[in-house]
Image 1 (tube, helix red, strand yellow):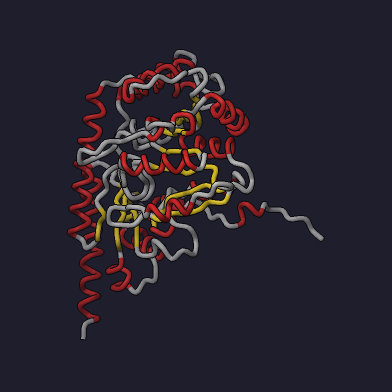
Image 2 (cartoon, rainbow, N blue to C red):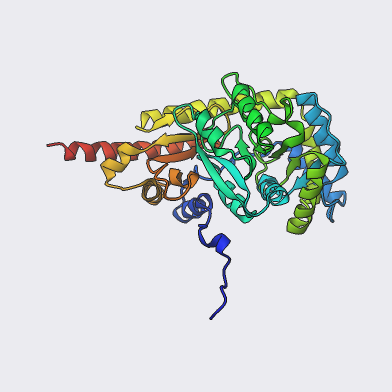
Amino acid sequence: MAKRKISRRVEGFTESVIREMTRLCEEHGGINLAQGFPDFPTPEPLREAAKAAIDAGHNQYSITWGAKSFRDALTAKVKRWTGIELDPEREVTVCCGATEAMISALMAVVEPGDEVVVFEPFYENYGPDAILSGARPVFVTLRPPEWTFDRDELARAFSPDRTKAIVINTPHNPTGKVFSREELSFIAELCIKYDALAVTDEIYEHIVYDGLEHVPIWTLPGMRERTITISGMSKTYAVTGWRIGWCLAPPEISGAIRKVHDFLTVGAPAPLQEASVTALRFPDEYYDALKRDYAERRETMLNILRETGFEAYTPRGAYYVMTEISPFLDAMGIGDCGAFCRRLVAEFGVALVPGTSFYRKRSGLGRTQARFCFAKKRETLEECGRRLRRLSDLTRAARGKARP
């Protein structure tokens, strides 16, 4: 009998739908509102720092878990924002982006047979990361319009024998939910009760709206020793291609993460770590402007969506909008969001992410949803609006013809 050539672990995986939509966008010359990267320039001081780092010779391996200059600057920034002092030698691991940080963290703490609680909709890596780590993901649903969770449902998801961790993403991709201090305190109580870890993805930590605050769960009572905090340079500083991320964790957990990270990628790009020190020292005014600029883009995007017939859920953080697309599915005779998004990019030149990619397979959830990214220049969003108005006009005409 022939041996299996492919691991059972990956049989249920598909390729990233987000990256697939980017490829289709390039094929059709469209506007990419699918993948979460800006189309405006990286801050000039950061670009200049990268050039200087290369010229200064920072082109070989740095220390596996991160250049000392970067770790020192990062812990100084953390203290500035939280008032808590971390040990840069024992509690920081610099990774190749937050994506690698997440898989390194889960592989470092999860045993085969453990369970990991995941909120859905979720960023599409979380479920596969849990499975690759040998765990079984247990899903708890966030419900619109405010993307709240049922506390009884969450409590039932925890098991005294099997639950190893819960993955929390705040501000949240794809919904823009910002978990409140009260919600996080409830989650913290469950983690303490069941001796579970919190693995929290905070990559959008500085992009929040409406006067809300981002609360790192590790700053709550009893959580510092049981939290792995993941973030990175990508979103805050408009350098998604640099792949500089990090894990903050207690020394014992950091030691385990560093071992996995070492064998996965060895180290993050050395010159870009050195350059990133410049950004980590940006003044508060930078972050104020960041929130202000994204709030303006959010309003532009929401106005376009409402004018063109999409039901948009107002995000409270990050730079995405989840929408309901049922009227378009009905008018166009399309069965689900995947077919809609592929037709939209092919015929109208706008790439989105179908909602089903953020939910577990065969759940039936997300079929009438799509995600827009608004990390774009104003002129890009305005051009998107013109293309969506063509779609809106055609679907209105189709609905008119369908009436008796």
